[in-house]
Structures are given as C-alpha cells and as structure tokens.
Length: 127
Image (cartoon, rainbow, N blue to C red; front, side, top):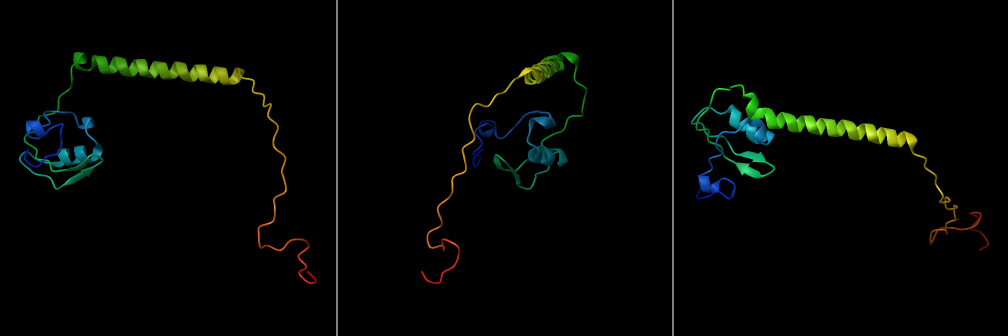
C-alpha cells in the first residue's frame, strides 16, 4: 500500500480477489499462473506499468454452473446474430448498389521545371 500507485487495488492492499485468467492482460496472467502460493514474481511489465505479484493461494479449477455463465452465453449469441445479420444486409446492399461517378478526372497539367534545372533541349552551348 505504501508504494503502490494503482488506484484500483491500492486501498485493498493490492488484493485482486479471485479472478479468471482471461480477466487479465496476457503478461500479468502468465506471471500469476506460473507462481506457487507464497511466491513473489519478478517485476512484470504490462501496458499498465510494472507489477510485482505475490500469489496468496490457488483454488482448484471447477466447471461453472449454467446459471453462472447464462448471461455471458446469451450476450455472445446475440452479438453473433447481430454480426451475421449485418454481414447479410451489407452484402445484399452492395450487390444492389449502383455507383456513378460524376466528377471528371482532372487533366494532367505540365509542371514547371525545377529552379536551377536546365530547360529546353538540354543544349547549354550558346545560351
């Protein structure tokens, strides 16, 4: 607590409670899951800064109940259906689209010679 600048966990002494591995950025999660209870990590760099992790305890993995994941499943199914409907709509509208370009392409205009560059036919005698 004394040296932490992490506003999210400083007040709880850095205790992040029990979380699934996918709740953390990869570097942090990899460091956490490689530790044994009581072990302290080397400094871990993430996009949020540097972290020193002390693993207090591990729980054995368990399968979540349907009620624990039901809302996440519904959310993912709804998002997948929305994406599917959008892709179909976009594909259909692209097939039906008639695009006409009314702007004429600008004509190429001759460019002025670079200052200091020879002009004419390249013959520098008699000038």
